[in-house]
Image (tube, rainbow, N blue to C red; front, top):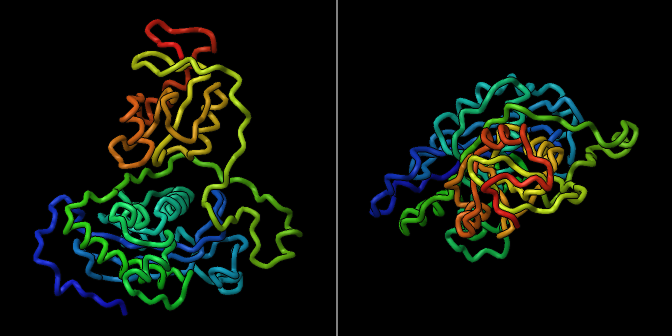
Amino acid sequence: MLEDHTAAASPTPWPTAYPEGYAVVDVETTGLARDDRIVSAAVYQLDARGGVEDQWYTLVNPQRDPGPVWIHGLTSEVLADAPLFPEIAGEFARRLDGRVLVAHNAAFDWSMIAREYARASAAAPVRQRLCTIALSKELRLPLPNHKLESLAAHYGVVQQRAHHALDDARVLAEAFRPSLHLAAETGLRLPLLACQPLTEWSDGPATAPAATRSARVGYQPSYRPTTWRPSRKRPACPHPNPGRYESGEQLIQGMRVAFSGDTSIDRELLEDRAVDAGLHVATSVSRLTSLLVTNDPDSPTSKTTKARSFGTPVIDEAAFIQLLSHVTPAGTQQPGTKGA
C-alpha cells in the first residue's frame, strides 16, 4: 500500500493556483507508434497536496500482438480474457475526471490514452497534464538522467516491479508528492499543458508480415526504446521561404510552419496536409519560422517560448486548417506580406 505522508504537511501556504487533484497514470503498450495499443493501465488518485485517495489497475486486450513482452511481461495468453478498451473506458474516465493527468513522459501516456478513446468514439475527461520530467527540470533536481528510476532513487522510493503499470504509478505518485511540495514551497508555476482530444486520426498498417511477427514472440517493428514518435523522413520543401505569415493574409508555399502541443487532428495527418499544400514543416522554432501552430499558446514549451522571443506569429489549429484551404502558390506575394 502506498504510504501517505501528507499529515505532516509543510505550514507553507499552498498556492491557490495549483490544481485541486491529480491522476497519476501509467500505461503499458504494444509499442510506441500511432497504431499501437494499451495493454494495461493504472491510476493513483491524489488530492491537492499529493495525498493518496484511491488506486486502480486493469489489463486491456489490445486485439493484436502484445508487443515487447520482455518489457511488460504481458503475453497474448494473459491478455486473452482481459476487457477491451471500450469496456473499461468509462471506469478509466471516472478516475481521470476533473484531475490533472500526471505521468513520466506525459506526452506519450496522453497520446496513447487519447487515441484509445478516439477509437472508442469517446473522449477522456482530461483538460491538463503534468509531466514529471518537465517538473524535475523546473525544480533543477540533481538527477543523472530523466528515467523514472532516477527520480525514484532521488527520493528514496523503492521500485518493486518495473514496467508493471500499477507499481510504476505507485512509484511515480511517491516521487511526485515531494516534488509537488518543493514546487509549492518555492512558488514554482507548475508546467501544465493542455490536453486536446483527438477527433481525426489514422492508424498505420502493420509494417511486417504476419509470418515475421510470429517468428519472435512479442516483437513489434514499431517499437523503439528511445522515442514514442518514430521520426519521418520528409522530402525537402521545393519552395523558398517567403518570410513570416502576416495576420489576415494567406499562407504562401514555402513558409516554415512549426507545431507545438496537442492537436485534435493527428499530428502526422496535420503535417502531411501542410506538406501537401507546399509548406515546410519545421521541427523547431527559429528566426526563420513563418508561423507557430498551437492550441496552447501560454504553455511553457521551448517552441512557444522561442516564438515569443522571436516575435513569431502564433495561431491555433482551427485557424490553420482554414488557411490550408487557400495557400498561395510560391512566387505570388500577397500585399502586406514581408519577404524573406
